[in-house]
View 1: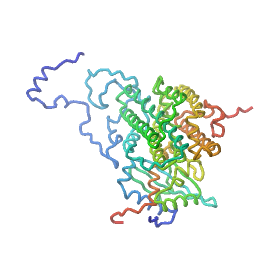
View 2: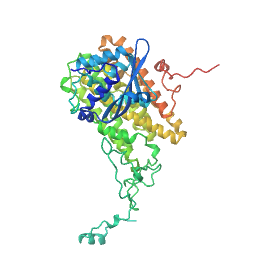
View 3: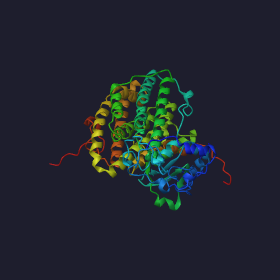
View 4: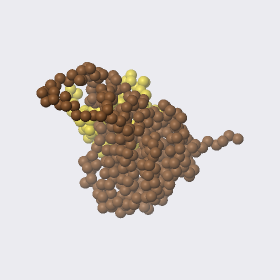
Length: 151
Length: 363
């Protein structure tokens, strides 16, 4: 396994994650259409927090980076301590994919360590509708990067 | 008018006189050219011009495609749902596309060969849960199928979405039946309480009533159960089953929630009818929360065994109950139907769920 080189968490890490996932378009098409703006909120020990975002658009996924961040309005946000996010990513890197104890669903289902918030029920239900796709993209952090021409 | 054999046309056609002349002066939009988007040519891409205009009330009751030039002598096919608000939701075109693109196979996409031998208690519990799910999922195919032929063809996108639901639910029934039979356990017991809830859905006197009971209440509960699947699953095989089913179920709930919202937006006076439907449904759901065929396998699977079930299983059951009721209240609120404080569930089930208990009356 080759971990994403950029530090976690960072805009660059999420951009590389989206690039890895999107580099296998057949796999993304097999997962099916998804339409979602999801935020990943990481809360530090001191109470500060950082928001990162992914946008699923049809079969594509893109990270929210740079100037887009300030205008990003996620439909659903998964929030939790930075240490729990780091543990999730390390699990994915170590196993090639999230193990049973470190999937996004497992970590968020009881409200500990991750909570889910959304402006309305539809945002939350979209998390359920696309859980397999979101997890597959997160699991790309543990997969060998796909060689892409020109990169 | 009585339709008869057109001998004159038969004569002309036998001479090869074909020129489509009868099609020249139609009302269709000649030159319309829908453009595919990035995922292909979607229903939204073809909802253009008059073809995209869905009437609030269908002007006739035929199967003629909406937007086509319709022979005035088409027969009345007897559709009983002729108002758009009775079946429509603003997300139905997108949900159809999503459903078609996210289909999966219970034969191919589940790693059946990886099923491990389980402790007999866990196998029993998993098979019992699979029995219940195999039972309840089919009603979500039977109900739309029962109403499909009554829905006017002008609302064809909604009909098409319901067709995807029928297929989804057939697959859910299939996958849970296969799970029960794949690892030595076999089918468990079907309970009368569960069947009573299914009967309530099937016997609904209107699509409104059945949809509220099924899409919003019943499938909402099952969705929460599927979501908890990663806790309940004794192996990665069941994890995959629950995750794939969850995604389908959430689509159905998204239709039900947005359909109710569309319905209430157009006619707020029907809100009390919907409250009454859900009152009845919740009364049976309360009994389901006390049905051993569901409660015990769920607790044992969540705890990882019978010995741990008393403590861990009970705690997991409480978390699930809170999530089921909390999510249900949020969906009702989003649809425009505030059920907070008027749930027909006993206090013991709703204590601790934000917004579930009636507000104390100020003295």
